[in-house]
Image 1 (cartoon, each protein chain N blue to C red):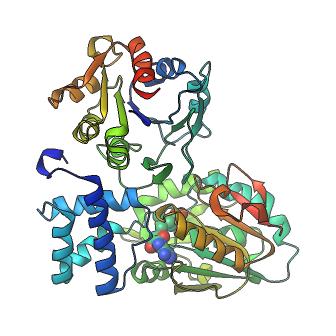
Image 2 (cartoon, rainbow over the protein chains, first blue to last red; image 1 turned 30 degrees about the vertical axis):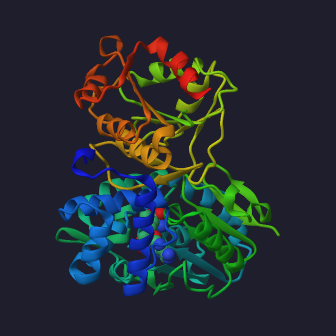
Length: 281
Length: 186
Ligand SMILES: C[S@@+](CC[C@H](N)C(=O)[O-])C[C@H]1O[C@@H](n2cnc3c(N)ncnc32)[C@H](O)[C@@H]1O
């Protein structure tokens, strides 16, 4: 990405072009990147500009408006759905220690996994709740704006090559059984037990545009809002707040802060390191 | 006039970044952002604490959307790219760039684009060529660019790579860097 290949990157012009691109995609196709975090949006857009052999963001706008395949390529570039089972194992360990005891006091539990990507996180919670005896009284709503990833999540299938890492995570997360009990190998992939999904509802839901659809005892929204700008971040925090029951627990990603949400005063900290918070007001 | 300092370092960086930070007075009216290559595994890290020791700057591991405040240094957390918008931090788990996450190029390019000629970039010791392009982008938008004098670096690959882009970066000994930063930012 040597800057020589690009014309002078005038910052003001670049900002205008990025706005136009986001507006154009929204107008023409309905995908809304207008409120995505600028620095990473910009980086990916430039990557696409280079890969398409173009020189300007405006050039990319022209191409995606006239060529749906180019739009698809841009959308792929813009969507990050990397995930892992028991990602940040400490989160699940602390969840088990500090949140599960509270959850035991409820006769029925609703959990929302917002931005579930391909379902790794959802299955991780399902396993955790099984092992703590709570799963049978739980319904997990797993949603993502990306229909394709939700469909993939429904298959409960993952590459067998990942199991070593996931097993290590599972153990570090305080898992109490043998991880391999939960899946069967099928060639290059493994498929997780159908019963893990008995109480999971997978659905497409866009945090930027859709509304709250229930009241939850637990909401996990991890590594999703880091892609939003401040306005959207704020809006989504409001949505999550409105969707949490009193004393409901909110789990964020390892490097996400609740401080800038405008709602931070409404939460008490369950565990700062693992970004677990409880709604108290 | 510099209004943000971006520092990139790899092998040998803990020492070198520490030296630079210790030379910055608490009232220097700019934030510092740091991409130091580091391991992703292993539990809690003391890197921020180590870097902040004996420094007037408060060194913190960056959280997403942190507001950039003067007198503070924001360290990229392991496994995340650190980027900036004017005034705030943005983290990303995008792909590795040149096998690195955090990547110095990613940080520097975002600094160049958010701060333009108000950006200051510093490349220190490292056994990698990360940062060379990022520093060139800061140079390109008219920012101040500094490279640690290669023979004085614990590993000279990174300073050499930064200089190989042919831009006229300022080459300084490690102990000259902080005083120079004070001059361009105060
Ligand atoms: C990096 S993944 C995080 C997956 C998982 N929560 C984890 O932490 O491992 C981010 C996910 O957020 C989803 N996402 C992005 N914007 C969204 C929006 N506006 N509404 C719902 N989901 C969104 C993406 O489709 C992607 O699957």
